[in-house]
Image 1: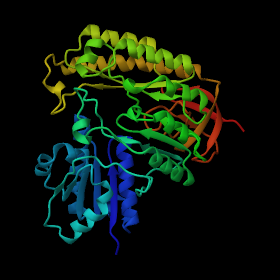
Image 2 (image 1 turned 90 degrees about the vertical axis):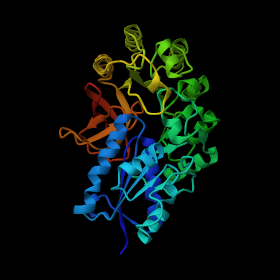
Image 3 (image 1 turned 120 degrees about the vertical axis):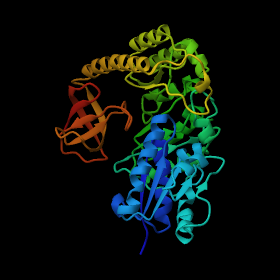
Amino acid sequence: MKTTIYIESLGCAKNQVDSEVMLGCLEQDGFVLTSDIHTAEIIIINTCAFIADATRESIDTILEYATLKNNGSCRALIVCGCLPQRYKAKIATELPEVDLFLGSSEYARIAEHIKQLKQRPLSGPRLIIGKQAFLQSANTPRSLSNPGSSAYIKIAEGCSHGCTYCAIPAIKGPFRQRSRRSIVQEARLLARAGIQEINLVAQDTTRYSGLPALLSELCRVRGLEWVRLLYCHPAHLHTDILKLMTSEQTLCRYLDIPLQHIADPVLKRMGRREKRSRIEALIAKARVLVPEIALRTTFIVGFPGETDKDFNELLNFVRGARFDNLGAFCYQAEDGTPAAKMPGAIPEHIKRERYNELMSLQKKIAKEKNAFLKGQQFRVLVDGISPREAYALQARTEFQAPAVDGVVFLNDDVTIGEFATVTITRSLTYDLVGRVIE
C-alpha cells in the first residue's frame, strides 16, 4: 500500500514553487498525493515566517493539523520551509507535535526524509537545517498545484540588500541566481505542458545578472503568451527593462515595484538605497516609455520614527502617483533585525489609522481607474471558476497579476486556461466585469 501525502503551502508564490518541487519529487518516487487532508497518512506544511502574522498563521496551521494525528489518518506531521529555517531548535522545542522539521535546503530530498522517518520514527534528528535555501534546476521534478495555464518560475533565491526591517537574508541567505539556460529550459517544459503565462519570482528579480537577455529569450519560447516580472527592487530596475516592454509583445506591460516608503528619512532608516527623487524619476520614465504600463507597489506604515510629516508625504505621493495596485503593511518588529532595536516605536493604534487612511485613498484611486476602463476591450486569460456566485468564471488582463490584483468576472461559456477578448461592461472597486466578444 503506497503512502498518501498532503501538502499545505503557506505564504507567497515563491513558497508555492517550493511546494510544487516537493510534489514533483514525491510523485516521481511513487508516493500518492491527495487533496483530502483527512485521508493523508503524512501531512507536510511548507511554512512562511517572513513577518509576525505569517509566523502566527504557520503555527496555528501546525497546531490545527496536529489534531489529525489523534482523530484522523495522519501518522506523521512534517514542517518545512521558513519557520524552521528561521527559528531552528527553538521552534522544534515548542512544537513537540511535529515529527520532523526541515529547513529551506531540503525540498528536493523530501522523499528521502519521509522514507527515513517511516523506517526509524523514533531515532535520528527531528530538525534538519542546511546553510542555504534550495535553488532548483530545470531537471528538478515539479508538479503544478493549480489548474489552468499560468505558472511561476523562481529565477533566484535569497537577498543581499539587508533592509533593516527584513528577516529574509537571515532565512534565505544571500542572493544566488539560476543560470539563464536552466530557466529557459524550465519555461520550455512548462510551455509544452500547456502553460501560457509565466510569472518570474525571486526575493529580488531585478538583481538578476543579464535580466534583459533572459527576458528576451523567454519571450521567444514557443507557446508562451505572457511573461510577467514580479518583485522588482527599484535599485536594479533600469531603462533596458522598460524598453523591452515596448519591443517584446510577450512581455507584460506590468511592474511590481515594492517601494516600502517615499520619505527620505524613513527610507534611510529602512536601509533602502534609493531616494524619493530616484523613485519619482523611475516612475515618470516608465510611464513615458510605456504609457499603458500598470504599476503595483507595497508600502510599510508606522516604521520607527515615522512622523506625521513623513506619512503625509507618503499620502501625497500615492495621491499623485496613482498606482494601479497597492498593498500596505503595518510595521511589526521582527526578531534579529536592526529595526527592532530602533527608537521611536509608533503606537499600534496610530499604525492602524495610517494604514486605513492609505488604503482608503488607494481604494478611491482604484475605483476611479477601473471606471475609466468601462467599454474598453482587453485580451484576458481565463483563470478558473469565480468565487462569487453572481459570475461563472474569472479572468485576468495582462495588467493584473495572479493572486494579488483584481480580476475580470465573466458569465460566458469559455474554456479555462485559454485566452479570450472581452469588453468591460462594469467596474467594481478592485475588479471588473466583462463580456466575451464572439
